[in-house]
Image (tube, rainbow, N blue to C red; front, side):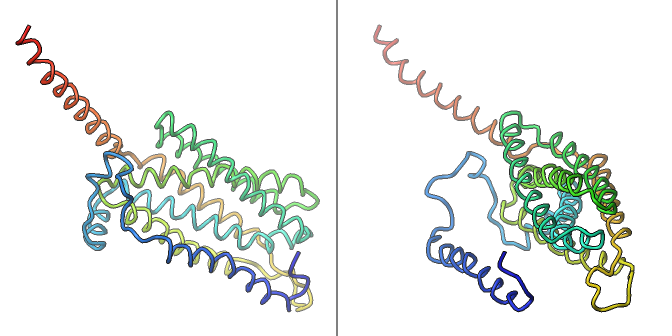
Length: 289
């Protein structure tokens, strides 16, 4: 809506800086304490606060965490490259910029919806691993479907539906995988375990974007022809990476829920202490009787 010509791109980038500057200001001025006034949970009391490098060394030796770092990081990279290159992928088959923008919006909106619904389900059932593995596999299937329909003409509805499904199953993994990162790395600090996964995703996203652009094939030499690249091979490679990551995660990722286990132990200990306190208060009265 803003960029009617290439001269308006700097204006768009300037508008982008407004919410970023507001958030930066609020975070800088508003966040003053290192921790909340009271611990959010019993397990937070035992969470370590060792230096960053010491925590990284422990995480590198944690096999489940490294598998999650690789697979989920690849997922973040795929989603980043998908949203970045979507317009170029669809342009060559005659789809308009409006459809590409709509597909990108559906990708995000349905992703938020999927993350919300599955988040509620996982919060009740605590089936982090099962939900993540199923969602990862469905996201891989959606990436395969996108690789197929994106190479067809006059299939705008199918492209929009597949983009929605890709976002729904893909983004649903995000909050649950962050929970899994904490569960398998506890008692390492949450900022370290979640932050490294996010960094891994950004690095892999850069690699994927560069790789997919290198795999394109030129269709025309005319510089006036803006959609002169074939994205058939890159979309197939994207689907291959998604499928490989899903298979690797499903087969090799296994972990116990360390934080939930600590929560249960802490809750039981508190219950025992409360019962002992009640018994101690009642004992003098029994003696007097």
